[in-house]
Image 1 (tube, rainbow, N blue to C red):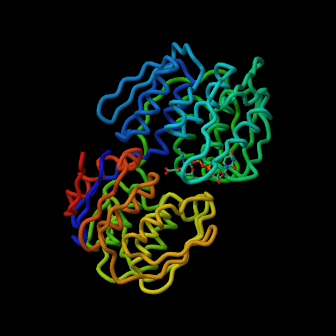
Image 2: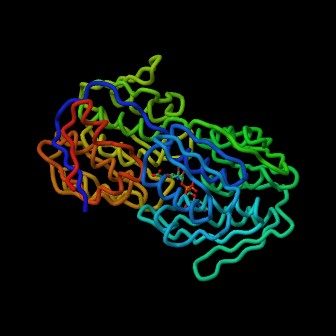
Length: 417
Ligand code: EPU
């Protein structure tokens, strides 16, 4: 099994180019199922999750060509509408095929994703909304089977809980439904806006994406598109966490400051200098961090996907910090690994209390999920001595060339194969 090895306490200085966003690329790849025309995606990050999604589309019969950061997809000859367990279990975002396939092909069979390291993660809200739009469905032997022989119709959909992929599934399904769909309590992040923009390019009528109310007027057919994937705000936030931990000064080229408004205000509050430049975001830090109280929340709140990286930083802050994880019920697995490095963290339900320590010490640690692995890299960059992170494959799901990017700004980080 591959390991990432980091020797810490080297300040980071230079430029890091932010890659395309994983969580924007995957729904746009799913949207290609809505049309038989060729779709071209640029700035697609080179990640395991993208490769898994290509595998899933291939298993349906889609024609996919990848060249560098461009992915061309044509779903004109779809032969299977089953998303098998073996692919779905690797990547929960596979559920994103449900909405488009029910809408265009009037049926779908998708393996239930099941739980994962960070929580139970049900998809009941996706299924209920599609049923309201005219599909029938049941769950049998671990598969969601949905049929809509008459096609889907527009509806009033109210999500009792804000769901990112749920909003994306219904947005895609509503684009090909008969009539008007109103999605209330919709997710509002930049990935939703990017998907809506792509759907509009395909010929859909979508209004209000980026707010909590999205209106979609269904159309009969959608066409192909050419679209560049937006920069990854979570990757950029992770590098802000890295500089905050290891000190130094870096430019995050292409990073979008607006998409990171809440985490940036928190980082500024704990003593990190962050300014927008014409090329991206400039981040520098040379002082001991201050403590903070963080509450994860749906966008535009503090992202759960940066919580683990923030915890690594707050382990080294002056005084006591608090993190409340309000999105996922089990997203503190990195805390136990940070303890191995000398952090002082106690967990009580959804709250972590972090007593800042003067330094972390390199240790052997285990990555448990994607963002937990990023937090261990951040901690390793700050720690005295060498940290060995086992199960490095987690990081490849969501960070493109992370060792190379960090090496280029002065980090001592490498991979043991
Ligand atoms: N939920 C339900 N029922 C549903 C759907 C969601 O109860 O039918 C609950 C979830 O259990 C959770 C909350 O609603 O407690 C929010 O979950 P959401 O559906 O928004 O999460 P997701 O769509 O499965 C996406 C990202 C995650 C990110 C979350 C929250 C993608 C592909 N994944 O997941 O990204 O953490 O939104 O922002 O967009 C990551 O990149 O590391 C990652 C996990």
